[in-house]
Image 1 (cartoon, rainbow, N blue to C red):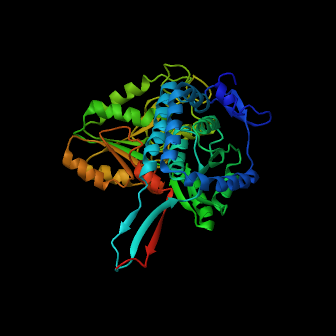
Image 2 (cartoon, helix red, strand yellow):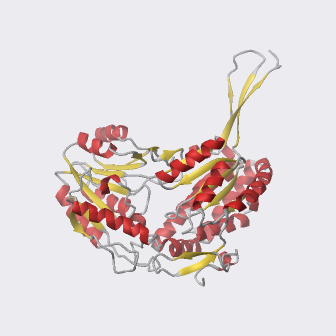
Image 3 (spheres, rainbow, N blue to C red):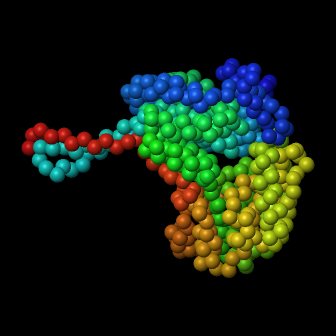
Length: 477
């Protein structure tokens, strides 16, 4: 409790009998927070619906200024927000600082885009008539966010909604509500009306999801999480024909072609795999290495993975934090043990780490094949599965052999190959010679069972706007 910044404690987090939030690195309860019931959502929605009209009526410049002030406050409280993020998610402090910078970038970007929600005029089909296309806010929106990036997932959804004049009600993961509540507090300081942006922590994920999707006043649902839950929410949202954005599971391939820069590819694969202890939806899941580079690559990569420092995220030297829950650790353990039983070879790691109950050692497996469970599942842990391939055609076939289509990566020095592979990969995002692709200026999202819609960029703002066609007659011919 004493580790939490004063402004967050003053925001009403330490409630007797509330929902306990645990530090995954130590197992200790950080503090308790109010646990909202699904039955409380309707009153919040009605207030949001009433308040959003006044917010939408403000000029774009006013909304822009409020979002810019929100950004400035995030920068001002960078260290405090990073500390909160590390305490509840377990990620190393340097990663939490990086996440805060990324989260703040969405508030800054959409503060600028708020003034650029342009409509259009269309050349008319007849004299005396004018065709106008207006862009108007969707209305009151709801969002459900995960624990792995508890700061970024709030701003990436809330900032575009607020920029265009929507209200946003959000349920953060029960594992990481403090980051969301801290951002809510700073939003109020920035001048964003209380009822227009609400954070509702709750242990009742199922109940909250159902009411978000079926409430007739809520016009849009945004969700980041598993594909299974996303499908359920889409089914429920269909009952009210609600707009939906879904960022779901991934099974990212990372292809190292025979002409790749070895050093750069190893570095990129380290970033793509071990960021946030492998708990990232766009993280490397299958590492495909050309047969001519395979052995040397594995040697270098294993040496780098083995040298990673595992420990409490509050230790400035830590590079790998804990998995979020014991259940998550058991899943990773089962996938690794299953792969070894199916014929994979252990290059390093492969067991729990003595840093604490929820830590798993950075692991590299070789000899992985596409029919193994670990190659078809989203690992969500610090485990790299290395697969060997013979040629470009085989690499593409393996990469695309999945129901998912979120992020993909490949390394090559051949520009013609780069163009071919970009076109051939069935993914919403492709990184060429880069191991990190997230940025506020580009559209983030997937295809196939990895989701619907895009976040970030100008396209992310369109997700919260409706087009209204107006035909104006009676004009001079």
